Image 1 (cartoon, rainbow, N blue to C red):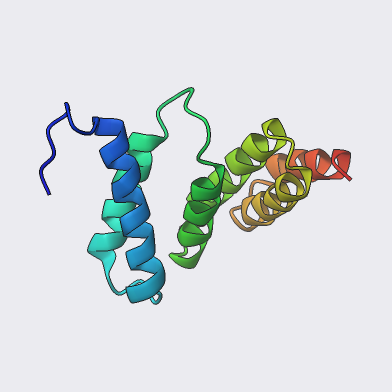
Image 2: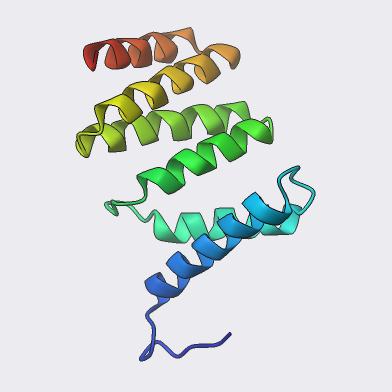
Length: 127
Protein backbone atom coordinates (compact mmCIF):
# COMPACT_ATOMS: atom_id res chain seq x y z
CA UNK A 1 0.00 0.00 0.00
CA UNK A 2 1.45 3.34 -1.05
CA UNK A 3 0.58 6.21 1.28
CA UNK A 4 1.90 9.68 0.63
CA UNK A 5 3.82 11.29 3.49
CA UNK A 6 1.06 13.88 3.86
CA UNK A 7 -1.32 11.08 4.88
CA UNK A 8 1.07 9.01 6.98
CA UNK A 9 4.68 9.84 7.78
CA UNK A 10 7.58 7.51 7.02
CA UNK A 11 8.12 6.64 10.71
CA UNK A 12 4.45 5.80 11.18
CA UNK A 13 4.52 3.57 8.09
CA UNK A 14 7.64 1.84 9.42
CA UNK A 15 5.97 1.27 12.79
CA UNK A 16 2.84 -0.25 11.27
CA UNK A 17 4.98 -2.36 8.95
CA UNK A 18 6.93 -3.56 11.97
CA UNK A 19 3.70 -4.66 13.65
CA UNK A 20 2.54 -6.48 10.52
CA UNK A 21 5.86 -8.29 10.06
CA UNK A 22 5.90 -9.32 13.73
CA UNK A 23 2.37 -10.69 13.43
CA UNK A 24 3.37 -12.59 10.29
CA UNK A 25 6.36 -14.11 12.08
CA UNK A 26 4.30 -15.09 15.11
CA UNK A 27 1.38 -16.48 13.12
CA UNK A 28 2.78 -17.82 9.90
CA UNK A 29 6.50 -18.35 10.26
CA UNK A 30 7.10 -19.58 13.82
CA UNK A 31 9.72 -22.02 12.53
CA UNK A 32 11.40 -19.13 10.66
CA UNK A 33 10.76 -20.70 7.27
CA UNK A 34 9.64 -17.30 6.00
CA UNK A 35 13.10 -15.69 6.00
CA UNK A 36 11.90 -12.83 3.81
CA UNK A 37 9.42 -11.83 6.50
CA UNK A 38 12.11 -12.01 9.18
CA UNK A 39 14.48 -9.89 7.10
CA UNK A 40 11.72 -7.35 6.45
CA UNK A 41 10.95 -7.21 10.17
CA UNK A 42 14.60 -6.48 10.96
CA UNK A 43 14.73 -3.71 8.34
CA UNK A 44 11.57 -2.10 9.75
CA UNK A 45 12.95 -2.44 13.29
CA UNK A 46 16.18 -0.74 12.22
CA UNK A 47 14.16 2.19 10.81
CA UNK A 48 12.14 2.46 14.03
CA UNK A 49 15.18 2.25 16.32
CA UNK A 50 16.95 5.37 15.18
CA UNK A 51 19.41 6.70 17.80
CA UNK A 52 17.61 8.45 20.62
CA UNK A 53 14.27 6.86 19.78
CA UNK A 54 12.51 5.29 22.73
CA UNK A 55 9.36 3.28 23.25
CA UNK A 56 10.32 0.15 21.36
CA UNK A 57 11.53 -1.94 24.30
CA UNK A 58 9.03 -4.75 23.73
CA UNK A 59 9.95 -4.88 20.04
CA UNK A 60 13.63 -5.03 21.02
CA UNK A 61 12.83 -7.93 23.34
CA UNK A 62 10.97 -9.74 20.56
CA UNK A 63 13.94 -9.16 18.22
CA UNK A 64 16.36 -10.50 20.86
CA UNK A 65 14.35 -13.71 21.15
CA UNK A 66 14.11 -13.89 17.37
CA UNK A 67 17.89 -13.59 17.00
CA UNK A 68 18.33 -16.28 19.65
CA UNK A 69 15.97 -18.58 17.78
CA UNK A 70 17.93 -17.90 14.59
CA UNK A 71 21.11 -18.84 16.49
CA UNK A 72 22.62 -15.41 16.00
CA UNK A 73 23.84 -15.41 19.59
CA UNK A 74 25.96 -12.25 19.51
CA UNK A 75 23.07 -10.18 18.13
CA UNK A 76 20.70 -11.76 20.64
CA UNK A 77 23.09 -10.89 23.49
CA UNK A 78 23.40 -7.28 22.35
CA UNK A 79 19.64 -6.88 21.95
CA UNK A 80 18.95 -8.41 25.38
CA UNK A 81 21.48 -6.04 26.97
CA UNK A 82 20.06 -2.99 25.17
CA UNK A 83 16.53 -4.06 26.04
CA UNK A 84 17.51 -4.38 29.71
CA UNK A 85 18.88 -0.84 29.67
CA UNK A 86 15.71 0.44 28.00
CA UNK A 87 13.45 -1.34 30.49
CA UNK A 88 15.55 0.06 33.33
CA UNK A 89 15.03 3.61 31.98
CA UNK A 90 11.31 2.87 31.87
CA UNK A 91 11.46 1.63 35.49
CA UNK A 92 10.26 -1.83 34.49
CA UNK A 93 12.78 -3.49 36.77
CA UNK A 94 11.54 -7.09 36.54
CA UNK A 95 11.77 -6.99 32.73
CA UNK A 96 15.14 -5.22 32.90
CA UNK A 97 16.51 -7.85 35.26
CA UNK A 98 15.28 -10.70 33.05
CA UNK A 99 16.70 -9.06 29.91
CA UNK A 100 20.07 -8.50 31.58
CA UNK A 101 20.17 -12.12 32.75
CA UNK A 102 19.39 -13.41 29.26
CA UNK A 103 21.97 -11.06 27.77
CA UNK A 104 24.55 -12.41 30.22
CA UNK A 105 23.74 -15.99 29.24
CA UNK A 106 24.17 -15.24 25.55
CA UNK A 107 27.36 -13.24 26.07
CA UNK A 108 28.78 -16.19 28.00
CA UNK A 109 27.85 -18.52 25.14
CA UNK A 110 29.73 -16.25 22.72
CA UNK A 111 32.80 -16.26 24.97
CA UNK A 112 32.48 -12.74 26.36
CA UNK A 113 32.53 -13.44 30.10
CA UNK A 114 33.47 -9.87 31.06
CA UNK A 115 30.34 -8.36 29.54
CA UNK A 116 28.27 -11.22 30.99
CA UNK A 117 29.61 -10.40 34.45
CA UNK A 118 28.66 -6.73 34.04
CA UNK A 119 25.14 -7.68 32.99
CA UNK A 120 24.78 -10.07 35.94
CA UNK A 121 25.82 -7.19 38.20
CA UNK A 122 23.25 -4.90 36.61
CA UNK A 123 20.57 -7.57 37.08
CA UNK A 124 21.56 -8.11 40.71
CA UNK A 125 21.37 -4.37 41.39
CA UNK A 126 17.71 -4.46 40.36
CA UNK A 127 16.82 -7.22 42.85
